[in-house]
Image (cartoon, rainbow, N blue to C red; front, top):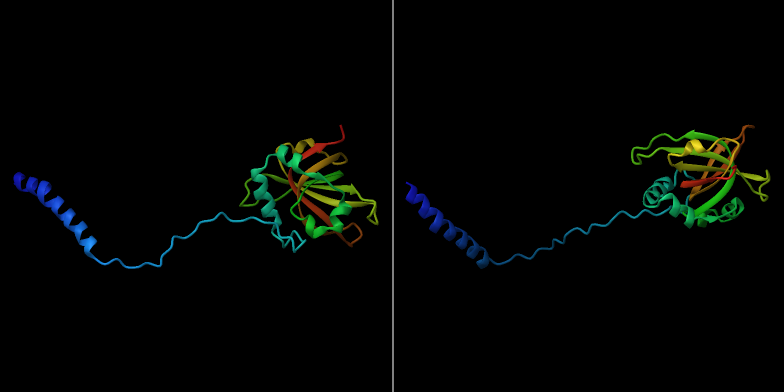
Length: 192
């Protein structure tokens, strides 16, 4: 019985394999229209046609871009800007890295997002703006970083981040107020 299995192993198995290969060579090849699917990375671009952060999707774009940039790189790349320049050119300013100095009046935690497993805080600031009827503009700085305890209300900071659009809120008198929104991972405490 062993000798039969040896014969099969040494002689018949290679013959079957060889004949199977020969059989495939004699068959006419079928033309295939199949092309492999091209895989591309998703492109994250800022929505520059909608200024509302509620609907434009720019938070996700900024968060994704910040994952690739460290705080030092954001700080060095960002340009100092006045709120007046942004409000005059709101749509062309979306997606730019800016720095702004302002007085912090409130800090609050931002609810955790399933897609971005980092802790984010909203730092509400008042930035001097001589072109505003009130002499100042509200800025919301959405900040990702562990050193949030270094920021206190009634202190001046310079923040650096992507300008993602505007948000509307209610002021103390029941009216509506528009706030500029930046998303970043760098700031400098100016009160020391």
